[in-house]
Length: 77
Image 1 (cartoon, rainbow, N blue to C red):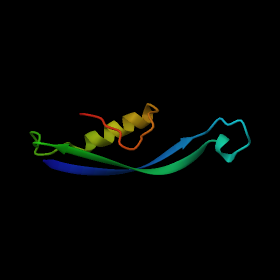
Image 2: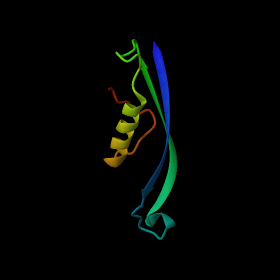
Image 3: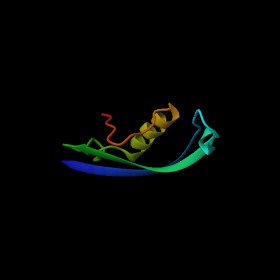
Image 4: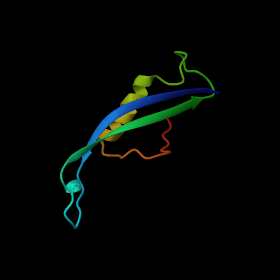
């Protein structure tokens, strides 16, 4: 079995709608570290488990679409 790990540092912004006064109701940001783990029984035609650019693109697409990354999120590609 082959394994790779890709670590991405991202900045995200959001605001919350709350029924009480809070700093969180204003647009504010957070920094996050997203770690993606991939494994494969065999290497692809390029000799890799997966191209790191593909991992980055998938994470960027998820963030752009509003999907909030959660622990243990599984995506097969």
